[in-house]
Image 1 (cartoon, rainbow, N blue to C red):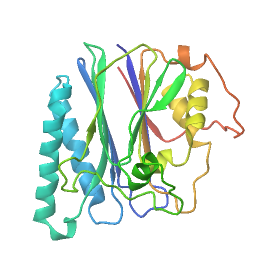
Image 2 (cartoon, rainbow, N blue to C red):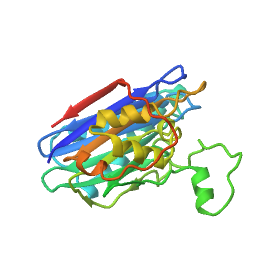
Image 3 (tube, rainbow, N blue to C red):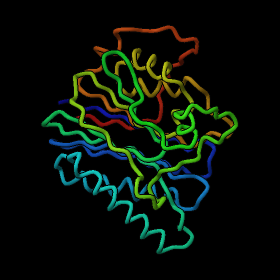
Amino acid sequence: MKIEAVWCSNQGKRAQNQDKTGEYLGEQAACFVLCDGVAGDAGGGEAAALACQFLLDHAGQGKPCQPDEVPALIAELQQMIHQAQQQDQFYSRMRTTLVALFIDRTAQQAHWVHAGDSRLYLFRNGYLCQSTTDHSLVQKMKDAGFQTGGLPDNLLYAALGTGKHQNATYSPTLSLADGDVFLLCSDGFWKRYNLAQLEYTLRMAHTPTEWLTLIEHLAPPLSQQDNYSAIAVWIGSPQESTLLQILPLEEKVVFQTPNCQRSRR
């Protein structure tokens, strides 16, 4: 099974980039991780780096991570963050979001875990859908049918480091198909675009590098732009299905080369 991945990360207008991304791409297994330090409290970047490195170290053992192993992994990671909080009072409230994708290349299956408002999207059969639900107050109120106008959209009720028992959501196992595409991204990324824009640019792209390029140039950076990061993961030959349909889009797309890192195996 061919896997091709590209990631991009931008500091925006913030003093520090608290987004952390990483990948492991082995013969039997693959793992892609994106963490976003929760702003407003010291140590968000440190919590994100700790979480990202912990999961990549585990993936580096080379064996596929089974779905029933992930809750224990997250519990261990949560404990590590709590220990770091206790060791330094300055970082006593360090927290991070998380979205991680695990792939068993032999069984051709995938599953993921997420905490906070970092997201995972899946493209299949010509359509892109959001596969995670934000752990945010705004999302909870929307689900309950309430209006959210004026409510800050960065209030999270679950993230690593919150101390709550239920701090992550786990997906069922997904059998992979040739042409599947995953997008992992922080809130600074997905807030810039709507689903139609992401889907449209994917249908135009021949490679993951082109896709992230087209996405990044749909919207210019804002004056107070948050950190934004994304990982695009292509399974097999997505370009054969992404070009099946091209829908109209009012926004003009300008093609340039972004600051992306690429891996293929």
